[in-house]
Length: 61
Image (cartoon, rainbow, N blue to C red; front, side, top):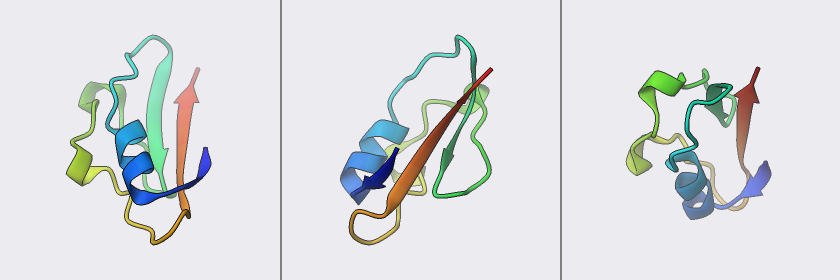
C-alpha cells in the first residue's frame, strides 16, 4: 500500500495483523519486521516520509 501519510502509515503498520501466514511487514523499504516482533510500536514504525509518500508491504507465504 503506497501513498500513505505519516499518521495513516503508522496506524496501519502498528496494527495487530496476526501471524497466520504473515512473514513480515516492510515499511518504506526497510528490512521486514518479523511476526514475532509485531505489532510495531507506533513511534517505531519507520513511517517518517513527508507528505503522502510512505509505503507498507505485507509479506505472506
